[in-house]
Length: 409
Image 1 (cartoon, rainbow, N blue to C red):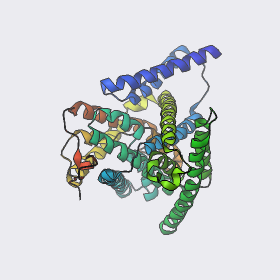
Image 2 (cartoon, rainbow, N blue to C red):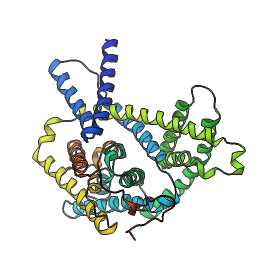
Image 3 (cartoon, helix red, strand yellow):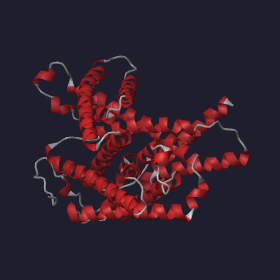
């Protein structure tokens, strides 16, 4: 039996790797195939009667590990440069405003017309308001450099801001004023801890010569994240700061630090660390979506109510996005509008909502359909994209010698 389990795991990893490679050519995000693979395994197990232990309780654990890795990977991709200040500002504005608008409209409709509480409405709206960087970034590979960078920054900030807002609403039992005060105080404490731990981990990453070091660094990061989560601190700030410091270590490259740090070696260490992080993220993400698909309730995906609810919500997401990009950022092109998929974080946050706080219209089947519909939009965006289109300079992608031009603001 042991060999069969190992064989199955190897086949799953190879299939997942194949999906990831082929998605670059077919322009179909591999997440769809991973979920469908999980659904297919469900049919096989049911038809053959193979006894498989219940691993559904493992899903939140795998998802949390995936969340940490995804935010880490996203933070490592964020480069702070003067000629990208407009790009970063626009991406933050896009992530913040679109998330806030969607949550406000969703909450207004469900409190006004369905008589649900404001807190429950906000709590159920936040998971589906967050762009999944684990889906968006790979899917944006065919876009121009400027558009792709915008997607990287926007999805990364959407993940971080959305998760922090979700945790605030979920765990805050006090008034909004005292809750916000506690939130900022907790954030300040987390930043202090993050700076100290980041310095320690960065030194460990740079100075350690033992052949096993990257795994220990990742383990320490997960440990800090877990401890921060236990004390209800915004743990993602720690991950974000650590990733940003590593990705932008050149900002600390001066005469003082050069006495203690070999920045050339440090840069090589970070490149190796990013590769290992990316491969671990790939593994965790693959198993998460396959497990999720395996436990999906198939008949619920074809219920008219679920289909209609998911379609209306998904349409609202992309209509708001189109209006914001066209009217606020003055972005005239079409493809970028389609790149706002939902994915791992949406599932993970929704599963974190206690059952008594979930809205009756929101179910795992509706969430699954929203993910499918949003990914279909991404596929449409890739098909509409023209490779010959010039890079978008308006989002701050000009060279270092050129002034940054933007139509926003």
